[in-house]
Length: 339
Image (cartoon, rainbow, N blue to C red; front, side, top):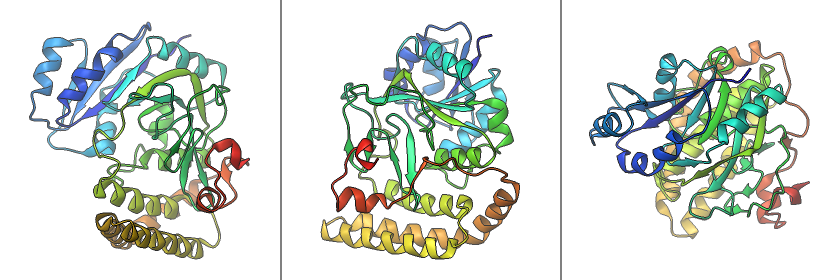
């Protein structure tokens, strides 16, 4: 039996993006799907434009901007599909993408799937935020099959075999609704960035499975909400990475691990100064102080997660070395080079 999909698109004053990318989603060729626009109190006529041009889309309006996490979490209660598909508002899709995702769900026991994510501007290359599926190293640095730090590969079919991945990109993440609800949804303390890695980490620790579905292809613009060089983006990435690591790491030497990560972040801050990027350095400093302020609450979450976790992360999903050393000192720029 085919699955039904609820595609949830969070937006805040993103009318231009919806005008450009929503048409391809609406034109999806699949029997059972709905599109829910989760509007975070936009004042750019988003609601009026959708109702006039795409009345088949369900528009849910919130009282304020709840961010990516809050907007998606609140939209779920308006969904009717058994599969939730969280899709960024700057993603274009192929017509049969849901058919391929449905087949992946049918033929595997995966609970979370990520389609192959290519660059909208360079369609023959992977896109930074997700590529062919996300992984992490032993210090919780995220990377992808197809993207290590800033090096992005061309898609030559090298990752076209469906396989387990550590995390699925929030740009296009499909999850069984029951699993999403049982996992407690997205952690809204993250606001933006890495909330999907946190969700997938919790999923693995609770016995759920995350997998790539490369036969389903989408095209992500990327950086539409927060540009790559945005100091705000740097802030969220560093702060949320520490929150995620503290919550989910099962290591018995967590304090030492966090300390080492803080040192590496400090090195990154100095490097930003050398590169004449003081905004990035200040963002890293602010991220650390924000992390300290949230530490008591985060440790309470950790206690709950660790006590409820009955499963270990499968071998091979966490790279056992330091990615930063392999990439910058040993010149390993591709996922297959790491192996």
